[in-house]
Image (cartoon, rainbow, N blue to C red; front, side, top):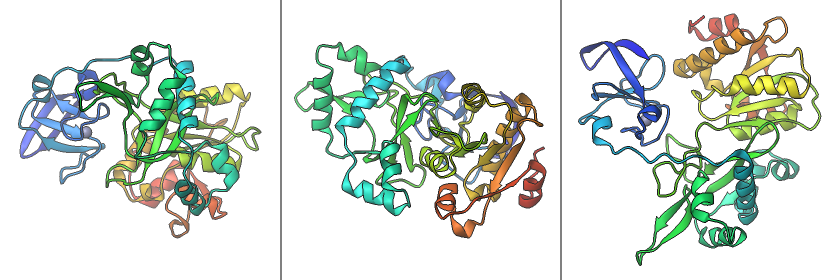
Length: 360
Ligand SMILES: [Zn+2]
């Protein structure tokens, strides 16, 4: 990727940016293994998660660096993620070992979910005190080579004990566990709605890249498919819970991406849903939080996704719309749908007229 830009009074033209995943380093700003970039000269980072006063028009924020992250950071050990059937097997045991707590059940009820929905979507609780649960997990897989097995599961890692030994651990803050499902309802990953969110992170994908025996979860995209389709429409939203709500309340297929920039799996998933349900026409509806209409950066990512989908699918068969609704009735599409609302569909031209941004 090459860009030209003025930043910190310097003209950077043209400047090569390297993705941190490709450079196999952690972002020097947010510490995460993906999405962010560093400049080839090692003087700037374009972080996608931590904001400052230097936003990049096409997403992220520019940070100046005091030392070259590629030269000064040790290369990370690259561990392969287990194949899907093994991930599914282990994650399902984790879901059995950690039941949903009463507090989390009530929090989901308060959000408007019914007990059937809470049961159906498999929400669980990752507690602060999780040592006993992990011990149970070890018991279940007794006799297996745990270094190999657990060592290929994102979210699991080894921790150093006080007396020099080490023990298995599930890394991540406590909160509601949300299974991230494939089109065939295999558990491909686990997400946690944090009990103590930070200003940047409310949802965390369990991932242990860079930890001892840890593995990266990569990009996780959730697919929520109803058992019977009431409509051929496919919704794309941000977040697993939102996709689940759209699926259960509107009986439509819903794709939940993690993060506005993480939409790159969407094309293949739409193709697979079409194939699985023998669909040859239907709307594709983009439904991000209502604030995308005000946030240019969020809209930019949506427009990029729009372009790619538009390129791939015949617009007569699969027109693309944006969902919009009365923000006073809920910021998120899930709040709005739970309140009984059905959003309005508008096309690209109308949405740009409405929000004043111009991309296409
Ligand atoms: Zn970053």
